[in-house]
Image (cartoon, rainbow, N blue to C red; front, side):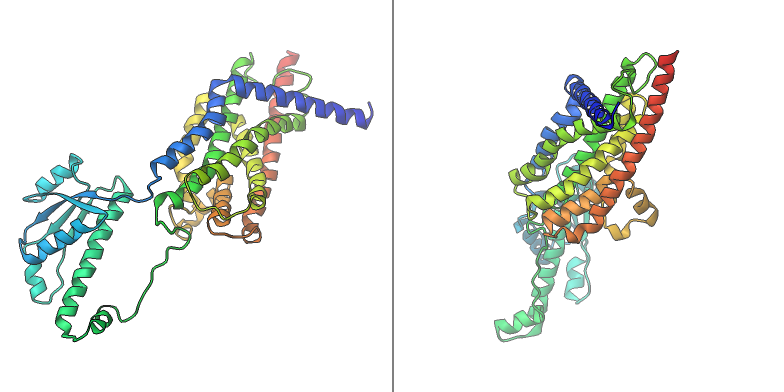
Length: 399
């Protein structure tokens, strides 16, 4: 057989494997759910939940043991803020904790008896803030409101004691240096804008690994010997098998990936600064790395249920290791090394810098280079494990 006919035969075999894998994706309910339904629906639900970006009127209970003008002023100013709403007054901390445990309130402001006494003596007074840490957004609202009101009251006392004659003197007394706060890359200061773009990229990796793993589990279940590669003439070459399967998932996730990184952010008004050429330069190596990573993992996990447990278990650690919800500089070196094994680490960082921070392709060249290296490395591991599966299938067919 000539080289030309061998190439044509290889292309036909890869196309046959691609068609068989696509049929498997459409027929298997589990694979269909994780490869199509979850990427379509889950980002909408997640983005809709955090679409408000910030929380307002967080219920707070007050324990006021001072019962003075200063304590009542602090309570009124907190209640007048947009983020906190005073819902109840408790006699002591036990009653306040009971209200928090019953979810009547999300936080407690505890004003001690000597609050006004210390203020009148020009001493530092203390107000304790207790928060329900189940939701970080409520903690932020309760704590920052108390800090803002305390700073405002301190400024008012400072002006009263300064003995100034003009309003300008009062302003200089409170703030000798004018400081303007500007939220960089997150003008709303919201949770959704900062974290959800990273979640969208992580969804691509996790659903791909889940779908490929479930398809591999189905192939093992339908084979009498539990082989991943069926005894078929088309499955006669490692590169044909890996290429045909990868082409199927690349075709599906070319659409899913475009939906996740362009349509969903536009629907929920997330920041979008990257042109489509930059996103394409990122998504090509990222999808390839995720596909070959999923194929490698699918060969190492024998049963369908195991891949679900594995990928769901590592989802939250992977989000932390990207450096989005936890500073990258504070991640130990060992865990940073572990994070380099996953395409989501470099994919999330590159996507946030391109689409949220307005970086150029040259600014994320390191991340793109790492993704291409991962694509090549996981392609090699996928060929190795599928080569082993091919040899096992041939041995069983010869029995």
